[in-house]
Amino acid sequence: MTADASADMTDPLADVAWEPGVAKPDPILVADNITRQFGGLKAVDVDHLEIQRGVITALIGPNGAGKTTFFNLMSNFDSPDTGTQTFNGKDLTNTPAHKVANLGMVRTFQLTKALSKMTVMDNMKLGAVGQKGESFWRALLPFTWRSQEKGIETRAAALLERFKMAHMTDEFAGTLSGGQRKLLEMARALMVEPELVMLDEPMAGVNPALTQSLLEHVTQLKDEGMTVLFVEHDMDMVQEISDWVVVMAEGRIIAEGPPATIGENQAVVDAYLGAHHDAPLEWEDETDGDDVTSAAPADGSSEESS
Ligand SMILES: Nc1ncnc2c1ncn2[C@@H]1O[C@H](COP(=O)(O)OP(=O)(O)OP(=O)(O)O)[C@@H](O)[C@H]1O
Ligand SMILES: [Mg+2]
Image (cartoon, rainbow, N blue to C red; front, top):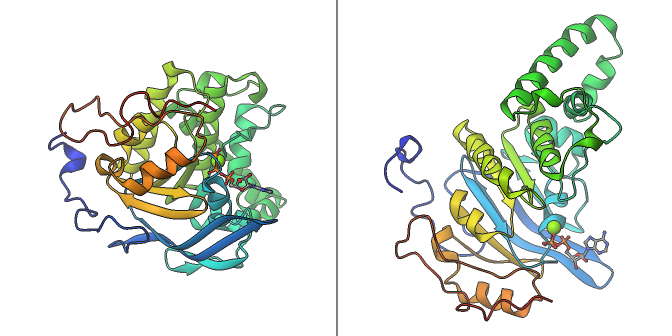
């Protein structure tokens, strides 16, 4: 890809070494010595990780690597056994999850959490109210509430429009397809006007007809100045939209680098070969057809489906 509007700026990661835990020029999120143990299993063991502001970072790794647990820990849906994370320089150790969202960091879930017996609009409102603890209490005061609810509804309607779901505003979320729920969840996450959006497998279970538009929505977040951190197993999507890739295996960060190079990293290849991964790892870059290809086991040898 050559110069388009978004490529005008020089790549902020161009001079960053391809090493796990490497420092970034302008990190929005920094994790230090984060560990989380479940029984005898150390699900997460991250010495140091920095997420660069204003770019799209993909977090990849075999099943069970600890990606979702790491998301839970960063967003304070779960507490680490050790370690701290800072967001915009602020230590989040004692910040409850809804306040983390309030500060500008939201996440979506691998299994969507749309409330099926509520309408799409009510789900959207919950994105604002449910994540903003204080405004829920303020909402009990009728005068402030009325003007605030109007603002919330306007924003929700605009987001539903943007995600092409306006016609579903009054439908129950339970009637939506898997892909539409993913869209609803992404739209709902944007209700708090976040700076950092963390998406846990946004494309999983999505009808192929919807994936391209989902990809465009993710790219659009970046174009609007947001930072995106997303977990994804589909390497074509990772190659297509990410600026940087972080690889996790057995709880640790084992590699980092630009998407075109990451498949050539031996530690990454070994991690995927060693794991009983449920999808083949394919690295060929179909969009450019240039020299940024492959590395991972040549055709077929990684196709073990366990
Ligand atoms: N609440 C829990 N209690 C016990 N073990 C857990 C819990 N949550 C996660 N684990 C274990 O921690 C490890 C990491 O799980 P996690 O869900 O974070 O992996 P993941 O990288 O998101 O995998 P996937 O790609 O399959 O979504 C796994 O071995 C999992 O079984
Ligand atoms: Mg997961």
